[in-house]
Image (tube, rainbow, N blue to C red; front, side, top):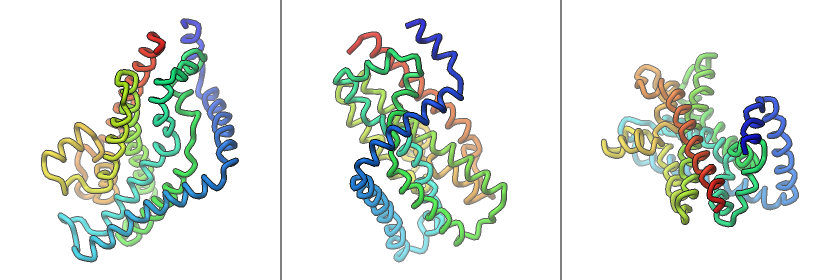
Length: 274
């Protein structure tokens, strides 16, 4: 095992990019053999996101604003959240299979390869249908951006990309934590499902919730960082709270903690062999 650890430390970024490309190619190749399933799944995802889009129209046909938020501001946040959630959907979807592999013992195969175990496990699956969510999210964001007359400048584009990256780290981290509970909890599926359902609240501004839920969604289950805090930098640049500016740093720290927690569980599994 010591030799494996030393070998992993010697691996550089070029090596992991090369390995990921090969794993991605094999996964896409296998998925393309079931094209009907891919097409149906993609259409289903687009329709489910379209329902959310239509819901805002129905809601705002009766109310001009909600707690000071207009329809286009809410649509901006909705599109922002869809884009931010795409990396989780596409790149980290294998976390849903973790509890099954741990239970059956198949996870042991990841423990004896001279490669980072987290990278190896996560990179085996790429959920292509998540790209449908990405395209819909971009379309919604652009649509709202146009109606809000937000200036299109190098700075605003750079800020949008940076804070989208920061936002994506939070939901990825939440699901990393949730998935890794399977190393300690036998029936951990409910933890994954509950945490994943919280993403539905991400498309709403945290300010519309009462104080208790604002605290929970900011400091306990930080879904307010998936869209609300990061998007304020572009959406309302004149009143950006400190938490918005700090979201990239907090996101990186949160992701690192979730990674270490995941690895801790994997090492426990490796040590017990169960």
